[in-house]
Structures are given as C-alpha cells and as structure tokens.
Length: 365
Image 1 (cartoon, one colour):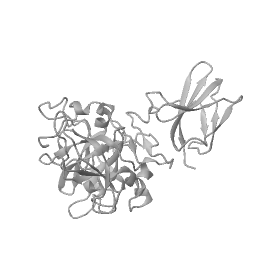
Image 2 (cartoon, helix red, strand yellow):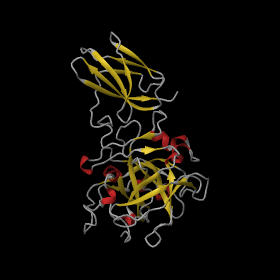
Image 3 (cartoon, helix red, strand yellow):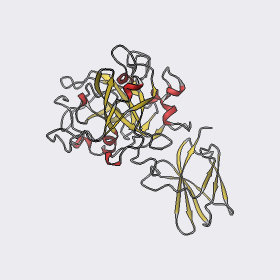
Image 4 (cartoon, helix red, strand yellow):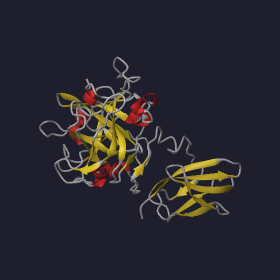
C-alpha cells in the first residue's frame, strides 16, 4: 500500500488534471519469475494516429542482474487504466477491470538507471485499440530543455491507487550519476490533503509542467513520507528526444515525430485519430493537400462541386495564423515559408457555409 502522506488523484489537488489522470496507467511488470509495479503514461505522437505508446522508465525493464526484459516478458506486462478511487480518500480499493495485456519495446535510453542517459522506455501496446470505456487520453509533451515553475506528477506508488504530487518551485537541471543535464530535480510541497511524494511503483511516471505537458519521467530520488522535502529526479523529455547514447531508431523523436517535422511541443487529446485535436471538429478529406507533409509550399486541391470562399491555416491551439485568398480554378498554392515546423490545420470555407478541415504537417527545411 502507498504510504500515509500520499494524495489521492481525485482530491482537490487533481482538479484541472483529469486528462493527465486518464493518461496515467499502472504497469504490472513481469521479468522472468519476478513481478513488480511501475507507472507509465499514454502519449500522443505528431502523426496523431492513436498509436498505444506508453512512456515509462528504462530501469522498469531491467532485472537485478542487468538483463533486459525479453519479448516473452513484455507479452505479460499489463496496463491498468482508471485504477483510482472514485473520490478523495474513498474507502476500499479501485477496480482492476480496465486493463490491456502485452507490449513491444520501441525505444529506450539503452541504460538501466540513467547512469549514461535519461532512463526512458517507450512501449507500444499489443492492444491496438484501447476501449473507449477506459477514457484513454494521449498526453501531450514538451521536448524543449526549458525549466518549468510548478506542476504535478501522477503515479501509482507501491502499485496503489493513483496519487498526485505537487511542486511549486522551478525544476533544476541535474544528473543521475552520469552526464550532466540529463534530469530535472523537483521538490514536493504539502497541499490540502497531504504531502505527495514518490515511492517504488512510481518509477516511470510523468512529470507534467504547468501547461499540463510531459517534461520528464521518474528515475528515482530521496522523497518519502518521513522526508517529504527531499528531491526526486526525472529524466528529461529533451534528453529522451535525441541526446541519449543510443541508435537513431531508439530515440524518442523517431517514434513521437515519425515524419521528422521538428515539432517539440504537442498537446494531448482524448481522440487524436478521430478529431483535429482542437475541440472535436471532425477531419474531412474532400479536398487535397499536396504534398503533406510539406516544407515551403503547399498546393490545395479544391473540393469538387463547391466554390471555395476562404482558406485558413490554424496552429495546434486552434488560432488562425494565416489566411489565404483562394485562386479561381481548381487549386490554390500556399506559401509556408513563415510557418514553423509542426502540426497545423487547413480549414476551407465553401460557398454553402460548410467548413472542411484537414491536418497538415509542416516539416523542417
């Protein structure tokens, strides 16, 4: 069981963090005859295709002898969604019915504890479609090496029901016994319902910044209920991205930015592959974008049978960043030189007042 000072995720400290709660999973780890708990987070990727990617710590997949988990081991790992009490400090256990079984390794830091890197492990679940009843949320992330002031960690200490820990200070760049600058150091604060810390089972949990995006994953630290002000260390997303001493195909960027767009910040979504990621506007494929991904120039092929009145490009936050006058004819060429690499939406207003939307990826030049 979690220690006495931990704070239930559904206490007041979790208000406004429901999406990040729904992205957090308890991981039942199997390594040969041994079993233990870690925490992971369902993460979004730039393709926004609902791939069941779970981000956790590399040391969760390494046994005491330094051996990596095998394919057979990974097939027995279980991911528990919604393993949380229904309300703050509700008596009784949480339901274990919302789970999926098995995964494959996609990327890692090639180090079992951060001694030569940032200690991350990216897994893809064997269950390609996560049931909607599990309320899966694909968390967003920030891969910039930028300190943040204030944020949360949501985790499963000792494999217990989901808890939340709070920091109000500014993250400090540090190390875990290897190269400098691989980890963020944080100190937790006392809140209304306790003094959240981390424990065994919290490993791999996400550190969320004040914009509710992942900036790190837990390697370890000295915090516990009898010493709640001691610091913890989180491997940086920015170091996971490209800096570990691993192959290109093992770097986090290879999997979370598969089209090499150069995107470093991505928001989360409950349904990234069924919506634009901005509200719940459905994507519509009745007009063409050539090429997509694009770099400097984009050709928009007009929808058949409907005159185009207006063309807009929206950024990932839904803000209009470019308005283009449609060309008479069946296509319009759009200059993208002023658009930074990343995910955008192209919105076309037709003569009958219908808005058509498609996702656009702008690549680095």
